[in-house]
Length: 307
Ligand SMILES: C[S@@+](CC[C@H](N)C(=O)[O-])C[C@H]1O[C@@H](n2cnc3c(N)ncnc32)[C@H](O)[C@@H]1O
Image (cartoon, rainbow, N blue to C red; front, side):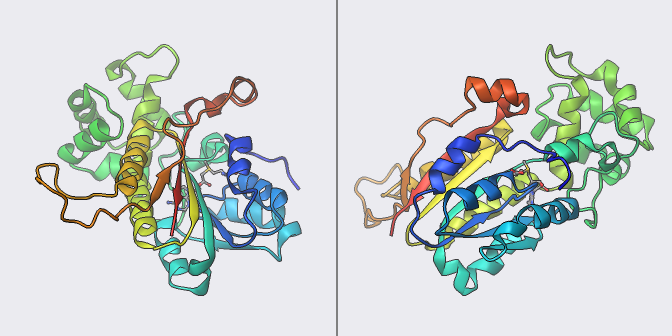
């Protein structure tokens, strides 16, 4: 087996969530390099695992890595928003006891310059699934100025989004992320710990892979799935994603769904799906931060669904 190109974040906390199930299926929506998947399988011999990823490199690597557990693991390629719907329509869907999503990109995707995720890349790609239609080049070179402004403001949260979008339109076509970050550098806010181009690259990546749409769709499927008892753990790296998870979990926990203006409850007061396990997001401890600095922005929230 080659060197493992991604260190799983919050690995102790993740193992703790799934280790005591007596049976059932755990879904790893973002298998990546199989770090969490292998730890979950290793720590609990009673469960089966369905692992999803849309990146063929991750599928190839983890197929080998998870081979020792082949009787208990099934690997599926695709976007988790659609694979989860397929699983829920099968018998496996009835046996789900846990679900993990460690959303965002893997270290390998970031580090492999030819994938185009880094601002030092020689191309403009950023597709997690290299067969997908939309690439970073399409966003940068084809989007209207309004559409670019939306991406830069909503996903990059950059205050001078208008200037940046204008500079892109004035200087395109761009052929590489390197070229893009060089031209835009004078327009980017100067951060102390972060290369200014990083936020722009992140915004384009979120658009290319429809990352927020994927997360919302996953949460919607979980809400509608009518699981009996299941633990749901979502790890996010971006404040927008964490906000989406936090809002969904607090909605799921509500028993009464009447309007806040209603004088008395008419909904039956029995709508809660379960309870929030982590009132505050779980973050990496000091030793993990030292060993894996990329864990610093990881936030995990856990929800327990009850029948
Ligand atoms: C942060 S990495 C996960 C790392 C993994 N937990 C590990 O321990 O190796 C995220 C992975 O999820 C995949 N991914 C992200 N969004 C996805 C989606 N909507 N559908 C399927 N895979 C996705 C990426 O391709 C990447 O390999």
